Image (cartoon, rainbow, N blue to C red):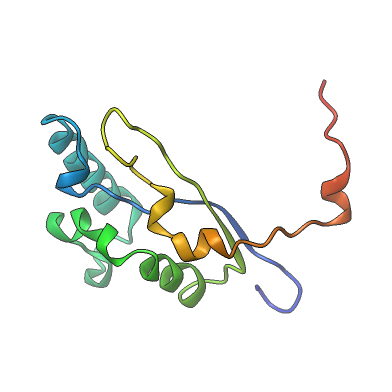
Amino acid sequence: MIGKDVFVVDATVHGWSVLPDNRTQPFVDVVVKLLYYWATEQLHPRGDAAYHLSLEQFERMANFQPRLLESVLFGESDVDVALYQGVPLYGLFRDGSSPISIAPSAVSTMTAITAPRAARPIRRR
């Protein structure tokens, strides 16, 4: 919650699973390195050592899910509810790059929140 009246929804949450045993092809090692450099050089605060991960830490992040997601989303930010999305990419990763199985407790306890506005049909042009 931001302040007392702004409900915060993170509508795109992914848990990485780029572990070596989840990769389907030898070239996926290069894809993982590309993702690593994108995440560490473009997405995190530059120069802040607290956010820097080694390649090995990045690859092993799946070992710390869903606790890591829970900590980042609800302990370190103002997020009130998050929507976890799986990313198949089965041609590259056996279980996908963001498998639903990473957060089984979150998936099994999901609660649908509906508001009167959400019940209205969406008009398409």
